[in-house]
Length: 235
Ligand code: SF4
Ligand code: SF4
Ligand code: SF4
Image (cartoon, rainbow, N blue to C red; front, top):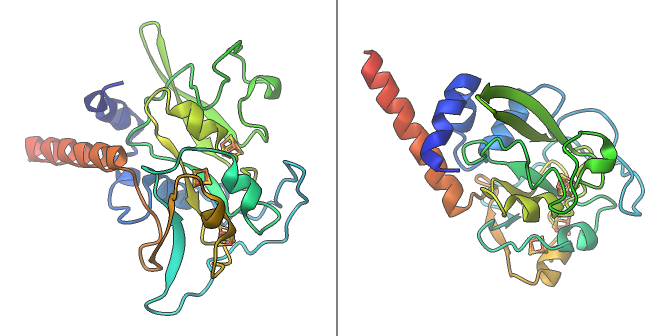
């Protein structure tokens, strides 16, 4: 899916503003913030999954001292293994899948949502790649024979296993993993960072605690140019 094709669909969705102006925080983080009840501030309990017990984890951002640093994942380094699910000291990992809507192809056969082999194009739980059913699929539009769907992450269910991220890389690579700071307790020595086979973890300023990959920045910049061009044409 070419990046230049994406803004047309985004205009249809009317959601350009949710992927722009997000600053250091990912476009999807902003989207989730705007979606009352579906983001990290949602009040539903954690889902027990992956052999781990439900966790009474904080759902509000932890206070950070001025000038402090937090752990974050560089999406360009992460190889989407299962380390983030396995090694976090919390019962349910503080790492969650995140959607970069500016980069997503809105695929019908999403390789982050359906298994790549023997998939069935039905949304029953038995057909999901995600082991916890944390990805929501919503029809947005049809062009001729092509159908397009939006995929969002229910962070209350996500266990950070990375399966969807690895699957999405077969297409646009819009799904990625991030440490969510409403859950992470900011260990001095992050157990995932120690185990990470790709050295993808690093300390970042708490004032800019989220990271984007290069292709995500490119897609967001392209979207911004299209928005500015459209704004100029209408004035
Ligand atoms: S352990 Fe490292 S490489 Fe594996 S999913 Fe986590 S950040 Fe990515
Ligand atoms: S497949 Fe993706 S959304 Fe589902 S639990 Fe794993 S990381 Fe989270
Ligand atoms: S710093 Fe601690 S709580 Fe945060 S992701 Fe790493 S291991 Fe998990």
